[in-house]
Length: 103
Image 1: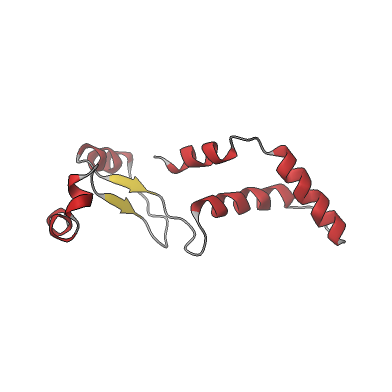
Image 2: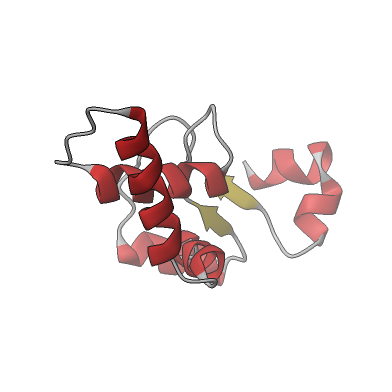
């Protein structure tokens, strides 16, 4: 695979190193395998929702967790819950989510 990348995308290979992106499934990767890939200069990226950017995915994942179990009978209830969610999040939400993406 590495040799194919050298020919197909030399900028990727000669840059920081190849990047592995698990797409459409959460693959199990042992710590030993992750360490070996890291030693070889490979970067492993976690899968993300294919129809959303990683930032959107994590935002909606957090929002879903926040409103789970709440009964929203009226539109104003949904609006108030959303505003409460936004107020409860800190300004470093994006920074925390980015760090969560790193192995």
